[in-house]
Amino acid sequence: MIHIERNPWREMVNHAQAAYPNECCGAMIGSIDGENKTVVRALALDNISAGSQRARYELRPEDLLHADREAREHKLDLIGIYHSHPDCGAYFSETDLKNSCPWYSFIVLSIQSGVFDHANSWLPNAEQTHAEKEELTWPKS
Amino acid sequence: MAKILIPTPLRQFAEKQDSVELPGATVGEVLGALTAKFPDLKKHLYNDEGKLRSFVNVYLNDEDIRYLNKDATPAAPADTLSIVPSIAGGANYGG
Image 1: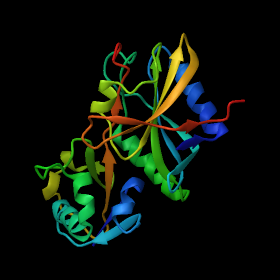
Image 2: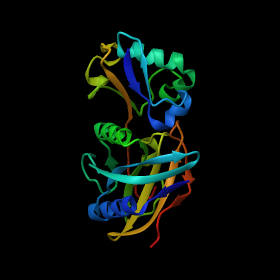
Image 3: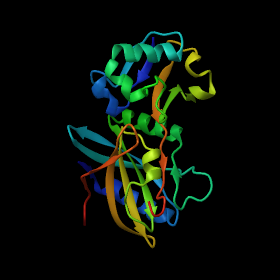
Image 4: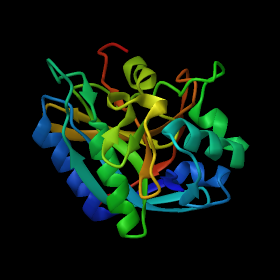
């Protein structure tokens, strides 16, 4: 399972709402204890997808390189990627799957009419053919 | 001996090390030394045809090796290799 602490969760939701009606994307840094992951820091990154970003996002690999370095400097780990789905559900789409990487948790935030609605975490496989839902928790108040 | 940084999820296949120093005159040789030392890493980095998986990028210090000389890029002892994924996606309306 993956748990997002209060501050990074707020930053992720604020980022997703501010980017609306476009998709946003970012990295999540934290720690791993067996099957349990805890996100303590969210890094808002640029969506560099060319053309309309209403239903597309792309991360700059150099930004992930820097996120990984930052995590290492703080004795933490790069453990996930987040992005938003404006005006649709937090499913893992075919596009998400075909451009994924099996090493990380992928959190999708559904933003409906500019406001956060729900979120899911996904674990794609190496062949990019299937993503399993991962239990996701965050502070609800 | 160039240094390779191991991404967190792959450390379980590399004796839990976050980095290793390995010999090799080129990036390809250093990567070969990595998968020789930790055979379980190979399937996570390479596909069945022996090519780096589509989402795997290798950086020599701050440079993507695709824009250098790929596997033949020289690797010096002070160099650091990083394994960085390509990630994109999108809602794909109706998907």
